[in-house]
Amino acid sequence: MTSAVEERLRRDELGAFLRSRRARITPEQVGLPLGGRRRTPGLRREEVAQLAGVGVTWYTWLEQGRDINASEQVLSAISRTLRLDPHEHLHLFTLAGAPEPVSDQQCNAVTPSMRMMMAKLEPYPVVVRNARCDLLGYNRGYTWLMGEVDEIPFEDRNTLVQCLTNPRWRERMLDWETNVPRVIASFRAAMAEHVADTSWKCLVKRLKAESPMFARLWDQHDVNADPVRTKRFLHPEAGLLKFDFTYLYLGRRSEVTMSTYTPADEETAAKLPLVF
Image 1 (tube, rainbow, N blue to C red):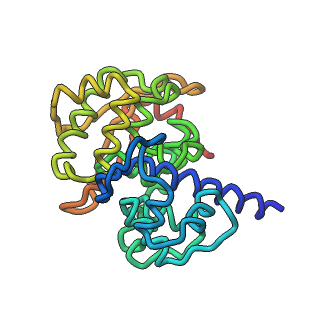
Image 2 (cartoon, helix red, strand yellow; image 1 turned 60 degrees about the horizontal axis):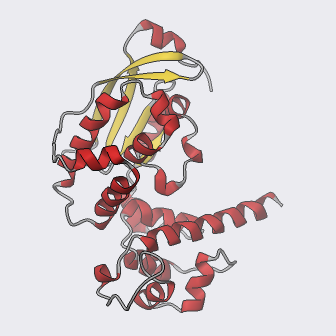
């Protein structure tokens, strides 16, 4: 019974994910005419099906979470149509219960050795992110510090999204108003190499719509590549915590970083959980 429930939830999540990705693609981006007034943003289901070369009914069933199987070729076609980045592409295959393509295995940012490092560094919080601030991996120390990250919907697992739109994160970050402008300036600097990337532009559009602070600071065009080195947190159980940051860049040209949070004082070190 449990496996049946899990399968149902996985298919529901797949449908929600596809709808969210479809909503962010405009007809112009894929060379389609506007075709009159649209009730909802993004592409229609029949347009995705047409561009991906699959049946409209079949794609509709996929979004509805019906019990159907999709081949690797079909999922790849849908991924290309929805312009998924490698992280989203892998997530699509996982939700669809399909084998991970070889290309995704090579592009997967969080390797087994990195996961081992994150586990060995516990109870220190560790998180792996890309330049777009997507959460690619984290250990139990990070979940203890920021709350149940696993409960955050996949499309919202982005530190900028959480810092700017999640009140629970904001409550834990004592220097939020000071640090967030620097983070946004750093994000703008990183976007210089991704100005034509759909996923980056969609993230900016979303943040401008959901966060007045982001919209105001984004329009100032400030850039800053210097990361925040020390942060303070207010944990609901442990109280005040102070951490120094170390940023490990995974390769000379890699945009993936592993950030480690080491206690900045003895009081913080004493408050970290010994076991999970």
